[in-house]
View 1: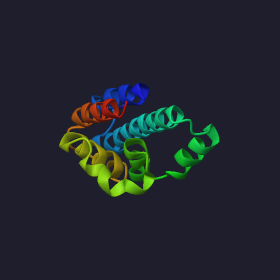
View 2 (view 1 turned 180 degrees about the vertical axis):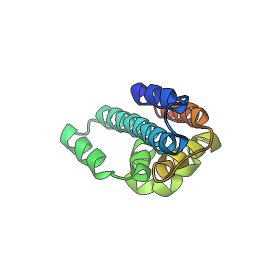
View 3 (view 1 turned 90 degrees about the vertical axis):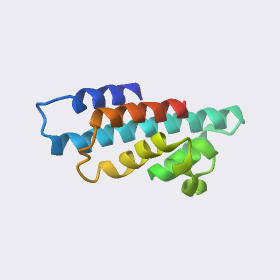
Length: 126
């Protein structure tokens, strides 16, 4: 997870890569970091409850969208995706939206800020 964020931060500060290329790549790296944090949390939660590993793997693998992956991690229920945006607060919600939508177009706002917000979101998931 931290490797994704370290790479995203380095790229966000690079003047050698055009902004229209940096934005989507930084957003994708941030998204990958959030997904990794979600997977770790889902595993940790379910292992603690004694859920068999094959069931955990199936649940994680079936959560293909960021929304369902976050819901699985936060609420231990992939069906609660509609509640993800309110967790754990506005800053994390902004990072979540940017990760979800930023890879589909140029996210040209404050890229180092996106990385910082994503780091906070990933930390909240840990």
